[in-house]
Length: 375
Image (cartoon, rainbow, N blue to C red):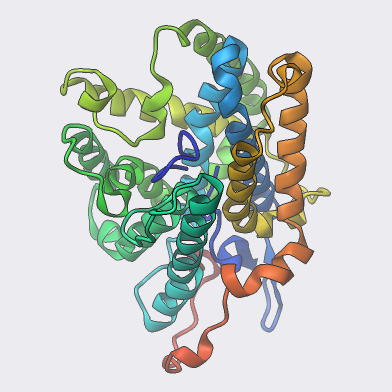
């Protein structure tokens, strides 16, 4: 997820933009599709981490521990979302039906929320001259713009013999030029591209591999070491490398440092993604149903974050102490959980998952596909 709720910044995926993205077909003709509890659980837990990360932003300057947690969470929460998004984009073939779903599930929400955030922040941040620009993603909407580009180019990546090394090369080059990144936050899109391509290359057995008991056990010391390393690195390392937003020069490093850090961050982030997925339960839990609403939680919690700044919710001194940090964390988790619930989905489906069937011609019948090819 992005570094902060600042223009062209940030937790999630889809987040799986299409409700069908986490479904698999049961055996037998005429059987209904069922959602995969593991991926719904993963998306919900990741979106909670996204909200917590945003809630910690005003607390970073006064707490080294919060900054360390913030750094670790930002190292893997958006990569996890993007890997899952790539995994469920394997069936995108640019057919009329898939293009229609891409428009209704990504393009329309992007336009709606880019406009909404521009107007809301114009009032909340007292910036009356802020214009609505669909080419300059504001706040959380960068992800929808990036997902549109990634998914639209999926057939190209699937035609390459070695797509992941090619995507890594593009991400490395994107850190060299400060001139990239204006329209549609292109630099961020290119630097996060390898995670999406990795998702395209994954198969169900790869997820089963990280969910083995020995991997779960190993994930505990790995995360502990990551937290210790982050605590040590707080005064020595710029965590903005995990935002994938700036070039190396903009981060105060020599240009050649960018490609090297791209590889290092990619390896570190994927290690934490694997540890995170190892801990995700595969069974149905009380929050499994919320996995279908993560896009709602993602797009809507930004308004709460903007409101927190508008009404100075972080003003009281106790908020910046241990009790306040715990309270902020719990409130962020509760708010984003509420935003993922079915009542919120029903109320705002017109904006997040609009039905625009009448705007398109009925596509010709498509041949039946294997369940593994479902987007």
